[in-house]
Length: 108
Image 1 (spheres, rainbow, N blue to C red):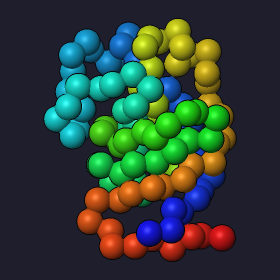
Image 2: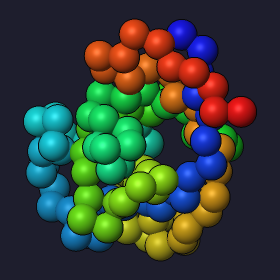
Image 3: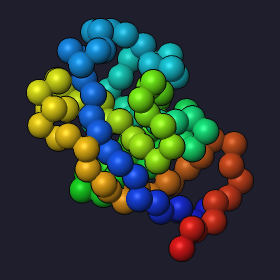
Image 4: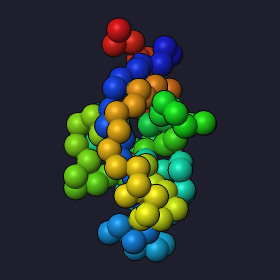
C-alpha cells in the first residue's frame, strides 16, 4: 500500500474541554494522550492509522466529534490548556492504513 497524503486542519481536545475522564471513544477504548484522534468517519474510518506532520510516531482514529467534519482531525491531549494553546493549524497527514482497504492510491 502506498500511503496517501492530504492537507487537514488539526485541533486538539482533552479532559475538561467537553470530555469527561474515563469516557470511552467511539471505538470503545479509553483515549490515549497524543495517540487517539477524532475524525469524520466518512473520510478517516475508525481504526485508520496516520502520521501528522510535526508529530513523532503514528496516531489512530478512535473517535468522532460533532464539530469534526471532512478534512479535520482532533488530537486527544493531556488537558484543555494544551488544546486551547494549539488552536487550529493546517498540517499534512499521511494515511498509513485504513481498515478493510486493500490498497490506497496517492492523491498527488
